[in-house]
Amino acid sequence: KNEVEQSPQNLTAQEGEFITINCSYSVGISALHWLQQHPGGGIVSLFMLSSGKKKHGRLIATINIQEKHSSLHITASHPRDSAVYICAVRKPNNDMRFGAGTRLTVKP
Amino acid sequence: NAGVTQTPKFQVLKTGQSMTLQCAQDMNHNSMYWYRQDPGMGLRLIYYSASEGTTDKGEVPNGYNVSRLNKREFSLRLESAAPSQTSVYFCASSEYGRGNQPQHFGDGTRLSIL
Image (tube, rainbow over all chains, first blue to last red; front, side, top):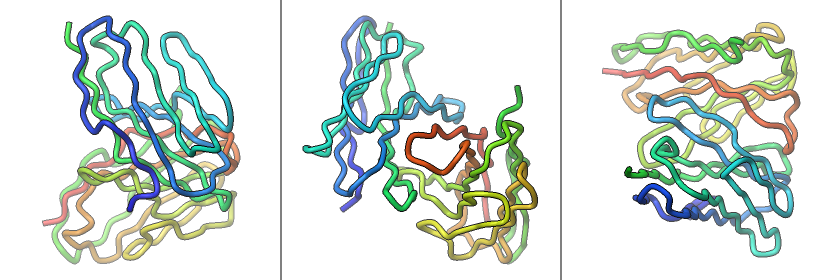
């Protein structure tokens, strides 16, 4: 079983919809990261979380340490949000483990 | 702002050939990483360098070697390429190797081994 599981694997939404991507992990962590991989392949760091909630523009990330679960929300989704969203956890020994990603397509 | 620069962007090798993937960062970061990304799987850490002069194995180090040439540069070498090493390789860096540090990624090197 992968140490980091994301759901759904694929997600298609209409422009304007509220989107939620989930991440569950099974190991102790020092931090959780959300990354965005553009269709061209480039990877950008969106958030780092060790507790609570963070917001940046239309993106919100939450984490529940007790339940070992994080969510990434996108409000008022737009076609330019189409990308693969990757959840990653940093273990206390500084090793990183990545989820397989959620491919989001937002249709106009 | 160059950030993390990887070369080459694409490469095709024959089985048994060797090559070195280059990575350089201009952000004065201490920690650097090499990952591979395969279809349907998450990024997997090959090697990392917490600071200049140190390197450590990650999740999938077999078949690879690394060199932290200086603070800026971290290279990944395939001594005898195998088809199983066909993948997209990403280099990343962070200020320090701690959990609360963001990682900055290069654009990737798409490597095919025939």
